[in-house]
Length: 607
Image 1: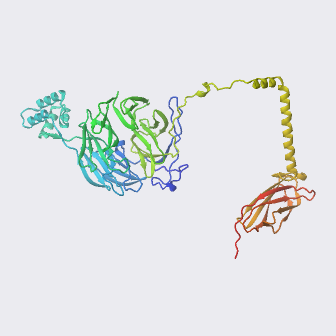
Image 2: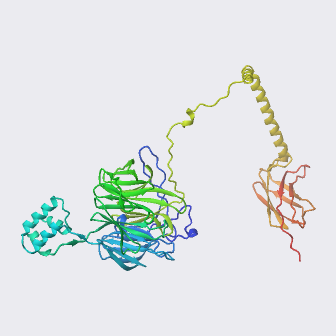
Image 3: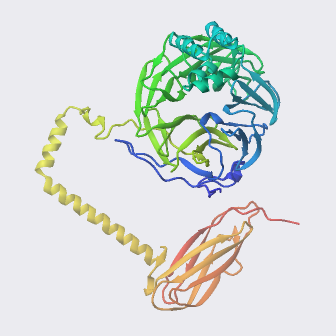
């Protein structure tokens, strides 16, 4: 099920990543935005399991170093009451949950060495706490009181003081008057058949004074230090329009804040003991901000319902149901909007802190596209060919820039970010540079300049002829010098005496014993006979046992190798050059010569 390929430009064995032994080839698919040319996709395909069998939302996944060994695991839960932990590409642990989960997070409840995180799974009105991958405890939300009018109606119905039809009408009237009803009353009012209403009231004739609420979203808030393993606290959003902040032990409620609507997405920033802000997107289409336990008066009103919330530095990105991403300053001012071609499935923030500092907004669409934005600029578009239901970005294994995608079909995909990925956007507008509109600071014309210009205008022909004559003389002198060099045999190839010969020399050894390997090639069309090869060097530094060698014949296009031993006799390892001469029997000039620079010799070994 895995698609693992060699990853260009990176050595996974060198940096010890535990995610995949060899990862990924870059996906060369890129989309186009109006007026923008998109770059090559920075994502590399690391792993794909089409039969994972878990369809998860973004809140159903988290990445954490569960054993404090630097190898981050992937924790997943789904609507089938299953929890699964992946170590790399294998399933490390799997367990059945007691209730349908709504969110999963990892937090640190204490300062310990090594720092082992605690796993929290929110289900219904409870938060199940796991430590060392074992059930440890559970936190239950406090029950909420039922309205006295509603409780009185159910009490009368239990005593049979009123019939079912009268109770139904009273509950309906109470709801229309603005009374917040319990879930039992809402289910009762949803029934239209009289027999079903009677059966429901018969089964529910209880003393209704309290009811349990449900958790809608969950996040983690650092307590007093902004470190990855610092002590943190759980932040819960519930159906009764409350936001609870639990203490680090997840046993008690540290702060509770009431909102005007039910929270659906939460984003936290800051430290609980210093200053913190909690941005909450609610079902009424508004975004509220909680600062140090108080709801601020500034409310951001959206045109449609929110489907995603990401906090990007001092900006808040909100994805809406009308296929638009709105960007607001955290004080409420709108910056810009990004219009998309299809609905948004999930949003997340890509943040790199170890190798370099980089942030980007990642948006998954219903058409299978995963888009990467830097501010309002589209960087790349990656095709997945499936509907993305959940997305999580962070460290997976030992790779910091990892993206885990969960699809509607139950498939699971992992992509990793190239280390040389560039998120920068050029703000330069197309067309000529703006510098060309700036006039040059031209100095004023002097009298000498005017006279020189007049002389050049009047004597242009004579000046051109003089220049051409000097240029021809320079070329002729250069050609003559080159011909003399070749004729004297000092060039890389000689044609003296009608022969064309190449000579190449290489020094082998560290000293004091060296070997000069000479390669001789006849580049002409006629063979040469009885060609002597001479080697000379400074006799005060070097000793050559056999300075003269004879080559009986040089066949055209054949390479002949001659090895000349040479010894350094200087005790301090002095250096000089050696000269090679390929001589001719018919001329006192060598056919070709070469100068070999000898390396510094090692000290001779003495007994």
